[in-house]
Image (cartoon, rainbow, N blue to C red; front, side):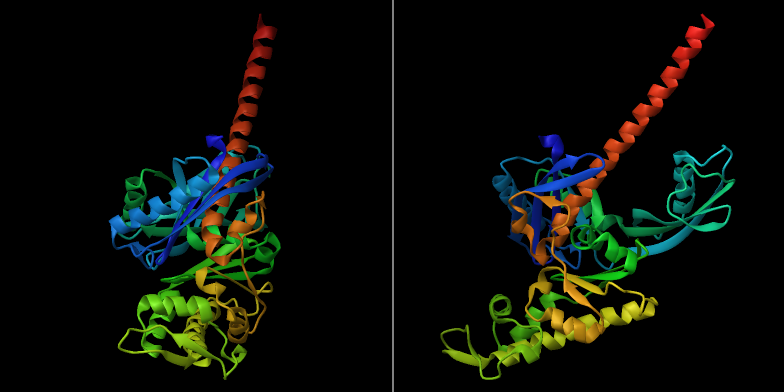
Length: 414
């Protein structure tokens, strides 16, 4: 049973989420993830994707994973951990090799990818993902899988995502101090895409906007490929700070007001509606128009979404995202955020929640935008395991063919 368990861990600025799933279905062709356990814990040990208090981060990991283990009834050893922040960079790199065999083999594909990966990285950087964008066989473009094709020249363009080595090491320490090991690091918006986007949306062109607590992440997909990643240092925590200053309450009370009465689109509020404000004994009972709270949230989120919109425009994807915008992350749970985003982006917008490739009775436990990354990390782990099963099967077939050939040769010779 433990061999079929995968765990996704999302250590955010304000919360840590853990999702444990069991791999089911037909491996490797049609795998499914059955949700077994979900856990959450508040944290203040991270800021914009970087560990700032390793003890606090470790505590939140321990609490979140323990809660998920209690629900699942199983212990886990390793987990796929999300990584994001302004230290993440992406570059496109080409590679080219000569093909000497009659047809292109998997080893040729691996060789050309290794050539493309041979780039000079800045100090304290390492490669997180290498994602092939397009293959060329004898200069013919548009090839997604060249294995089995005939050609003498194989080229590839790869999308290389890098991360800070020190950031990764501190995240790893936080997980290891909690008693677990990191199976792999995964870019958070890439992980969230596994839980929220369909293959048709990726093919048509879509932008995934993850509104987190400390930062906002952008991932653009086009023609079925991951094309761009961006990070902005403003998100839900800044909305909370604005509320605290705007209505003179503490940060914790501002967070409660946001969750209970918050609206991201001011026109949806009744101007006559009043809400009670928490306060100290010296302040006495206070009231404020809910419209003021909505105005504060509206203005900050409009600023954040406008930054994302400008990034999409700078990258040349205006008019190319036929599937529009998908919003996810904890801040995307605010009522009215979809209406506000439609006004800012002037294109179709929907809320992204985990759902695809999930099975079992606990699926509803993760059907919230705040669980998109953790669920996506578990799905990523499921697909990695399915890929490993497929590769093991292919190696077994190759070995059987070789042994069969040797056996026939020996029979003929003797």
